[in-house]
Length: 165
Image (cartoon, rainbow, N blue to C red):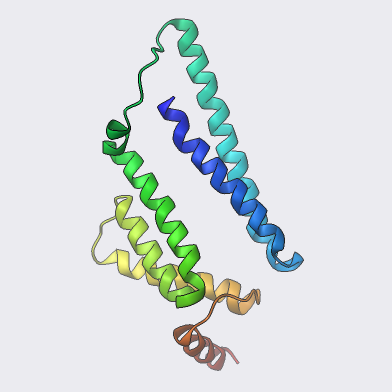
């Protein structure tokens, strides 16, 4: 049962994201909807696979029902990492409009990579900044999907447009 908790949480999160994405304009909403639908498919397949594994273990007599101890679950490093990613994603969604895309995305990528175990001190800041800038260039300037902008993004946008044009 413990193995079903995280996929169910992700499934609920994806369903909420899918419902929220219905308000996006038709052109700008296509990519997020495709990504959300892909996540839905992956999580659903993982959930079905896990249920089949539990059923086959029950038939083989290997599956013993154990009482779920939340203290034990919260001590599991994998569960802590997954909860951190969920919480950081919710904070990211809340702050992206207030801080701007590049700033919060750089922090978000840096923290999540660090938590997931990528701790190369010289590469991590560069990867975080470069990833945020590349995403901003692709979606904000080339595809023309409006991203939340604050002072830093406006300055970078003017600088890049000056270099391109």
